Length: 168
Image (cartoon, rainbow, N blue to C red; front, side, top):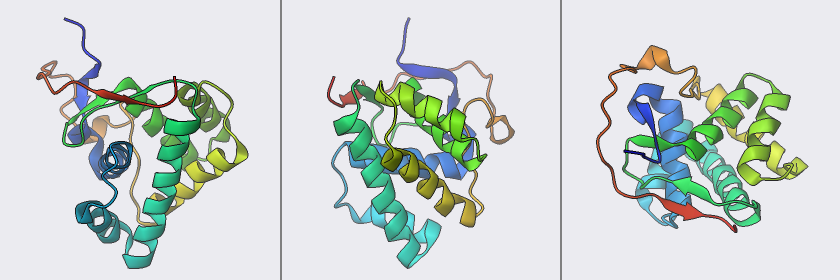
């Protein structure tokens, strides 16, 4: 049976950095930005002032991908522990930026947007990872997150159907 979720990896496997990114991204994509829980997660993770700024950057990045990108972006429901390929690519773009690899970050952004990223979009990615790096939060991907996980169990549970955001 085909699934939109990546096999053998969950957000739990990838650690807190990836969890915060994806939780925030999904909340913004589904229009849940007024939820106090979202602001609280960012405030606890980055501090009162920095948390608000980190959330603003993530909102801008999410809106740019969703409204200015040329393809639909598959997003799992907010509380889902599984990842879509698109969400994994977002983590890969951020992880590349955190590794100070702008070419790899740009390549992932280009795929996500189905066009070359603007300078502003690239800046958002590098600004986003700055908040994570200051707090010592690594943004792991399915490729580099094995140290957190029990990856390889091969068991995937059925989760709710994903939604798509974007222009295409």
